[in-house]
Image 1 (spheres, rainbow, N blue to C red):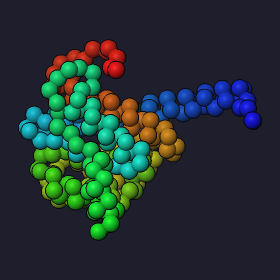
Image 2 (image 1 turned 90 degrees about the vertical axis):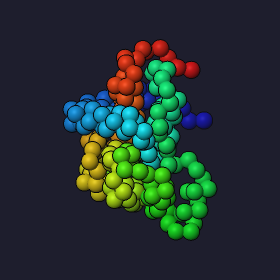
Image 3 (image 1 turned 120 degrees about the vertical axis):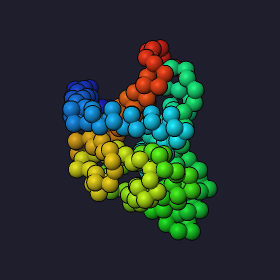
Image 4 (image 1 turned 180 degrees about the vertical axis):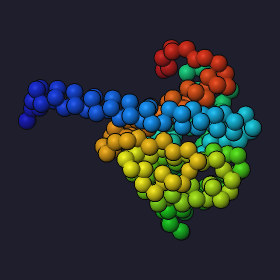
Length: 205
């Protein structure tokens, strides 16, 4: 069995760490104000009895579920559940819409069914060009939802389609996705502390 070179592996780890850190630093410089604004929009929606609708594909679908779980259950503090729904989890809806109409409509139809003016639609797309996320953002804007995008690189088509855009300035997909998770966790923390006070730092199980 072929073995990895320790020297090459260590160099790869160091390079990845440096590039990941750079992606985080750059998105923080570019979008701290936008992230705070997004947290304020989400807080206002939840205080008004509205909800956060989150969606994306692949790893971004996993992020949508992750964020929804943090809001509905808890992030760093015990507090009442907050209304967030990942539009990526109902396999019957996803497959029926994809089969009967188009995969491009899997999120848009759910927003038409569930979205109300004042809700927040948060789309996640590493490339900024996911057709089903684009379609969902169009419908969200049409219905009067607040809109936000997490994307990367040049931002793609989605960079001009939302009120709030957080674009990770990196060309490397893994680092864009790592930065997305960092931003998502910060969003959860900002909303939690904005609504319920400062969090502790005890680890969750």
